[in-house]
Length: 201
Image (cartoon, rainbow, N blue to C red; front, side, top):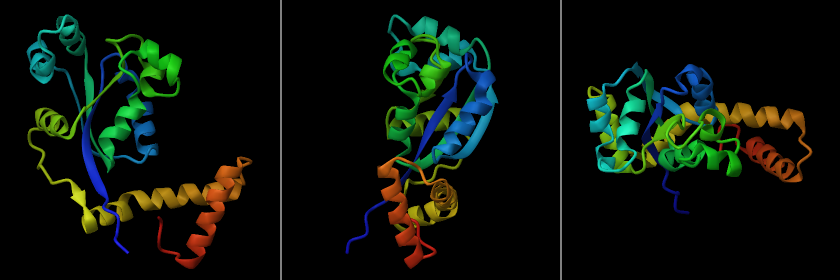
């Protein structure tokens, strides 16, 4: 049987000036959703630094407002890692417009902490190449490591993710949820874990 390939990615997350006072809550949300915070720093960018960071959006009508806002106060920069980190973080953030996010996905971060298209609480890398560039920008001294796959990814998941997952599934087993789908999943977990005490799938 061919072993499925596991890719552990890195992405950059920013907690913007409008939400930095809620950074502890946001970081807790990040960790509870399976991310490892590899690097973290709090900083206050100048308008020129903001213009460099968002250089791909130079020329847009909102660009002056964006750089002014992002340099208006401190931000928190985070390097996040997990399986499919880029797509997962984008999903957790929600739509760029906080107003639309509140209508369609009220539990996402931009719905909870953002107030407008501009003041939308958080930033995330769009692509793998963007993540590499943005991480280098915010963490110039960070050693660049390749995306993990194969045995390296399994080791990462075994060390950082599986213990948390196992604790969560164990707690679910104790609560006996009413949702039949969840109950079936838990029963599958019980059967699997009884046969192999050291494996989380």
